[in-house]
Image (cartoon, rainbow, N blue to C red):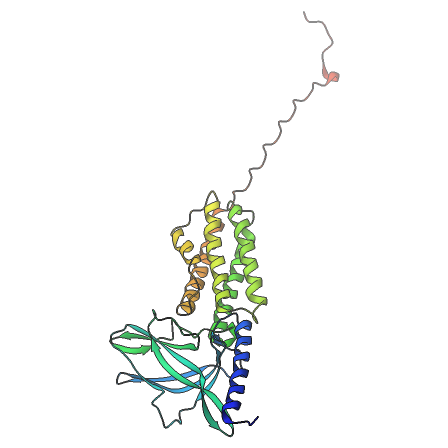
Length: 314
């Protein structure tokens, strides 16, 4: 059989599909940044109603198992694909990089790569299985990039240092909670302590030892366990009453969402810090010292028979 370009491309496509299926199984259908010695970097230029990708270094995987190994170093002369118009009709938008696995581009030196395109989508738009969100924009009179509330999803926390920073923050606050909880084990609120202390200790061990395999969704779950555990402990205890308990329970029911995951975890860690401050007040509820028992009455002295009068009374 003659090896034509069509045959070689079909063989390459078959190989790519097999690799994508394997990666989809390995990642459980999740998308996100891959742990790499090449950290994620992105530079944008927003002006005249357009957002332009001026620099990008990205190694990630899509839900469909496409590996995105893409770099823009700012030397591109054709900017038709990296300059996307912004719409003033929306209040927020997400920038995605999309993979077209059926279209290949010659990179020179005998190498080819899938075609990559950029797109702006609304929060209500379903993310394509061949897309990866990389930035978030808010419209406040002018468009601006929102880095405080959004971080690209990562396959593991080690995919980006800011995800890892959240894990370190959670470890610090859980250690502080454990240190403050231990002395309260015999206080008047020992019922709440007996429920809450094991929960905090368990999550502390988890986020401290499983850092290589923790995902942002798992980190959110650990934060939710710590927050909801405190609300449950206060409700079971006969003395404690937690203000705004509904806020704690509602946070525990928030599902994972790539759009708000970073913001939710930051909010949850803030609630954990508030719990840490509340535990300081437990010392004011310490059991009062037991009163000393009253001394036993001393027996009356018996008369000395040697000093008794033996004479007759007249």
